[in-house]
Length: 88
Image 1 (spheres, one colour):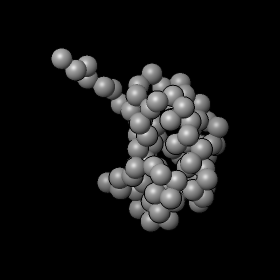
Image 2: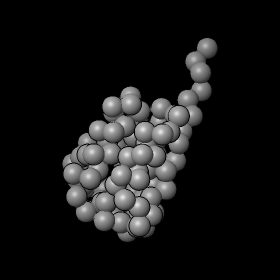
Image 3: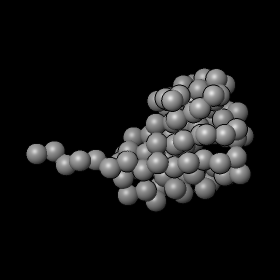
Image 4: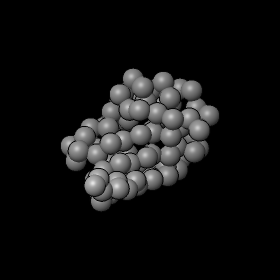
């Protein structure tokens, strides 16, 4: 019987720093993490920022999904960084 895997949802605000989110990913006890970008944030401007988040999750063997709402540039940058995305 397979154990149910829990999900951590991290809501990212415009004032959150990259280091805050990396810390939240590393501190999460769950294997699956959803990053929710519900408002404009500078973190979505560059795929490099998103790649840092993905690498932090991968070091801990965690699955990372970005939920990016109404931000086509952010979705494009997440895909360039290699992060799976949803936009709903």
